[in-house]
Structure formats: C-alpha cells, structure tokens
Image: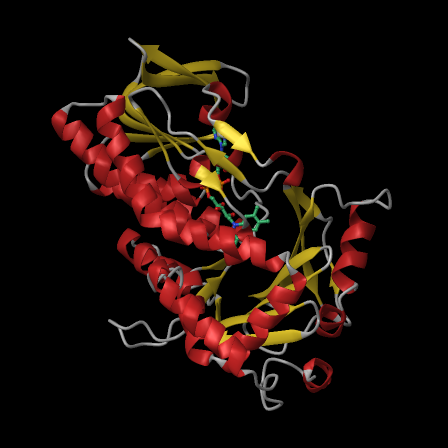
Length: 427
Ligand SMILES: Cc1cc2nc3c(=O)[nH]c(=O)nc-3n(C[C@H](O)[C@H](O)[C@H](O)COP(=O)(O)OP(=O)(O)OC[C@H]3O[C@@H](n4cnc5c(N)ncnc54)[C@H](O)[C@@H]3O)c2cc1C
C-alpha cells in the first residue's frame, strides 16, 4: 500500500495552503480532491486583507495579482434601510500602508491554488473521494475511498489533514458536528451582470428577512449573497424568492438596478455549525472542517489559510517527535482556539445585533459618526486588527458614549452611497 508522510483531504483554500506549507518543509504529501477543478463554491468572494501576507508566504500572491483582481477599499453597512456607515480599511499599524481586500471568484482562486500545488512536489489526485479512514490501534493511519472509475483505493500516512470543508468525512465518520438546528441559516448566491456599483466596496445590507453581501468581482460581475432564516424560503421557488428578497430592499434595488443574475441561484443550507476536536490521534482538521459561524464578517478563507499555517507547524513538530497521539495534536486545537476565539465571539455578537433591528440601526448610525470606532471594527473584520480591540469593555463604553452624544446621518458627499439613498437615510 502506498504510504506518505501526510495525506490532505480536500483542495479548497485550507487543503491547498496546507499542502504548500508542508511541501515547503520537504515532506512527502498527497492531496486528494473528490472533484475536478475548476469547480465552483458558494462564497461572498471577498478575502480579508490579512490573507495577503499568507498568500505571499505561500508564493501565490504574485500569480493572483497577475490576474488583475479587484481590490475592495472597505465596507459599507446599512441597517433596515434607516442607517448606513461606510469605512475604508484603516492602514495597518506596522506596515503603515492602505489595506484592501482581494475580490476573486472562487472558481478562479481555488483553481489557481490547486495549480500551484500541482507545480510543487505534492502528489495531487483529483477525482479521489475519501470515504473512510484506516485505523491502527485507534489512531488514524491512512484513508480509503473510490476514484472516478469507482476503483477502490487505500493509502497510508503518518498524519491525515482533513480539509474537506463543511461536509468533510471526519465530521460524518467521527460524528464531530453539531449544527444550529431549527435556528439555522441558509444562503443563496448568484453572480449578476449589468450592475454598476457606486464603488469598490463590500456592501452589507441588513434587513428583513436577512442580509446580503454584495461585492464586485471584476469584468462587470457582481456577487450577491443572501442569507436568511432556514424556514424563510417560500413555495415560490428558489430563483423567484432570491430575486424578490434581494430587490425587496430599496437600497439594494437602487444599487442593482439594470442588472440580472446570470446563473442559477446556488444554495448552502445549515450555515452555522460547531465541531468537536477528533478524539483520535493521527488526524488534524483545518478550514471549514473545524466549524463555521456565519459569512457576515467574511473571514472564512483567511481562517482556512491561517488554520493550515498553524496545522503545518504542528504536523512538522509531530513528525519530528514521531508523536501522532491525540494529546500531542490537541496542542494545535488549543492554539487555533486561542487565536480565533475573540473573532468568533465577535461574529456571534454581530449575529445577535443584526437580527435586533432597533439596536442595529442605532449602532450603525453611531458607527457612521464615530469613524475611529468604525475603523477598528473594519480592521478586526479584515483580520489584521486584534479582535480584542473591539470585543472589550472599553470599545463598548466608547460606542455607548457615541450613541448618547447623538448626531446626524452620513455626509451627502459620501462617494459610495448615492444621493437619493443619503436623503432617504437622513432623519
Ligand atoms: C454563503 C457563504 C458566503 C461566504 N463568504 C465568504 C467571504 O466573502 N469571504 C471569505 O473569506 N469566506 C467566505 N465564506 C467562507 C468560505 O467559503 C469558507 O470558509 C472556505 O471555502 C473554506 O475553505 P475549505 O478549504 O475549508 O473548504 P472548501 O472550500 O469547502 O473546500 C473543501 C474541498 O474538499 C473537497 N472534499 C470534501 N470532502 C472530500 C472527500 N471526502 N474526499 C475528497 N475531497 C473532499 C471538496 O470537494 C472541496 O473542494 C462564505 C461561506 C458561505 C457558505
């Protein structure tokens, strides 16, 4: 049976970045992906500015830049058609330069990343679906599955990294997933053409029955993702429901006017779920396989890259020490949780906030006046300002005093909110 140092399951951002990190360390790596690329993936497609540094370390940033991707300047958030704030990403303190977020369609980004892996010494096996693990004394020591021709395979590894995303084999086979049950959310996504957005920003519009993320992806295309309660969609059919709900908000209607979806609406059900760490050695989870809160703060790709960076360090130490036990590998889970804890907490707080209309309207109004507070929040959302700067008593107090001080709505000279929208929002 063929044997590797590391087998990686999945060729999304988590799997390809793990492969590139581990190949750089000189290990013998195989990456198994069930699909053939290019393959599509429902996503808001804007990538936290902090991901640039990781792409650069992986040697893929130049290739991404050579595609001349759009770079978004910041975020615009509107609440229930009554308040809005816009904020450019603040400069990163250490670099002192303007930060921007890449906006690249996943079909393109994931293909580019997998191509990079193909050019490395990693063995890439597309069309290989992992259906189970091989165990030795309770420890994972390989995988089994079927290739496209339905031929069964078994491959051994000293460590398996599962980067299989939200439906990864670990979550099903080892029963690690608990989703958010009846209160779960569902996402609908489609690219539109014929739309001219006011600027290169990510536009988050919060309203009933959910919110949208709208971002330009280049060449006149705009990605429109709608997130609503799972029980929301009516009998009218997915495409009609999506279109009616997106255009049911007047700000979105103004923004998307003249445009049309150019593909069938795609769906992701049960958006949020949490995951227990595996209770066996020989296995690490990265990316969405470790859990998912909600796409509102758009950090999934960054968290995938970063979790793979942390996992690669841990895998190297485990291989050096020849220790693949659950207890040793649990250090990676601790590290990851420590680093992501506050950002995930912020995502959960924002979830509460966006579904409380009057509070949400007030907070957005306050942020429109308090540009420094808005900047901190946008920097945290961009993953380069520590989440502790917003998830703190001090920030809450400053927000409250800004709230109590009152003031007016955004300035009419604001370039990313159109004049009719500003007049409507002034109250
Ligand atoms: C509606 C929505 C909007 C989002 N918007 C954003 C955004 O704007 N910005 C952002 O950064 N993030 C966003 N995200 C999150 C982002 O899409 C994910 O965090 C990211 O794709 C996770 O990458 P991954 O590599 O872990 O998983 P995936 O990208 O899902 O890749 C997993 C890969 O594993 C393969 N695979 C699975 N099982 C097996 C198996 N058994 N054998 C072989 N191969 C297998 C799959 O085919 C797939 O190619 C959004 C997510 C959703 C749902």
